Image (cartoon, rainbow, N blue to C red; front, side):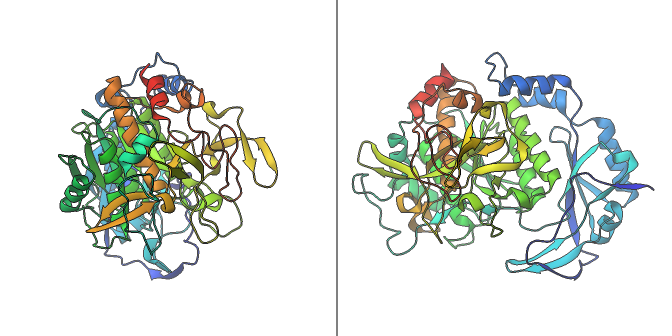
Length: 526
């Protein structure tokens, strides 16, 4: 049987990793095979009109999208025949999600996809991985867009930052003396429109950790929200709500996300989709939420990511296609832009943006530092705690082309001034993220203060839930409205995130600025 390399599937070992030898041949694993969507020129036209801000383009229901753009039954049949020929079991299939999940042993997958899975060790632990491309038979060429999950290295990190001790557990009752805020206080300072998110569902994607209902009840009681928001957990790829008991671990991310969304949109249903921290798990969580016809989320909040350069091209494309589907269905996807400034935490001396925030169809959420009295923001600058500290992620994509709504913009560098933006610029918008002016939260029984762009994604998700409630329909892709100047934001003009400097209008530190919620609502509802 003739095999050919799957385009965009090439993998290299993680930096600093060393191979220990072949992976256990009897180890069982699950792999997500992503299929192309059904060819329909109307979808491209629809996406172009959405990108241009055409108000006449209506959003599709999940059922309508599945009817028109689901994977072709012939392609599904080909993959199932391929699986049977290699002794692989079909665990799950979803034409709407373009996904077939296969189960088998390392030996079976090595033969099926022409790879040699190895065991690798690195500073953060160990993983099962591969080098080079995947291979597929001729009959699957064109039908298969990506194969994810053979390599189970961690795909992403949570973008939250706990305030350094001492003093990170002292909460102030009002914002006048505060060096930290409740989400309710920030909602007021950012002039978010009235609302509770009633009738909406916000999906939160998590790749580890968990929450305890008792902590949520205690937190919401303390900040005056009765009853506590309705929060439920959804398992993806066998992951579960599994709190670790460590407030500095992934529980911090999970609790921050839930508590910010729940405080801003207390009557919205919050569904937390827990998935393994792999490229397959991450994408499966997103597509599961996106095509969830039982919960019907209108907003997705994502606070995990990794340097764009660490992802395979097949992953970048598959995630981006999922976000395009979200736009077609009216789902707004809010994604944290990272907490390591213009380098995104890499030490190669180059600039990097964080993915999936760098997808043009993600609302990339950057970070600021807020100084405020009881009623108003006195000053807001780029979040940058200097060497050894955090800073809002942002820059210019090395993969995604310039979207229509960013045409004509400039990117301003600390050294070198302004120059034309030629690829996707990150972030789109921003909000309070500095741990020194962070969010009062409760994690594993501990009252603490957390920052990071992780807090900004659920902040904007809560804002969109309020807007959707008032609008009576989902806002969906809001980039054309924001970049078209139909809503004024708090323009951040002071500070830098390393290479890039704040400037009037859009910049690669804070995007278009932080929320002026009433103007965003008026533009979207009007």
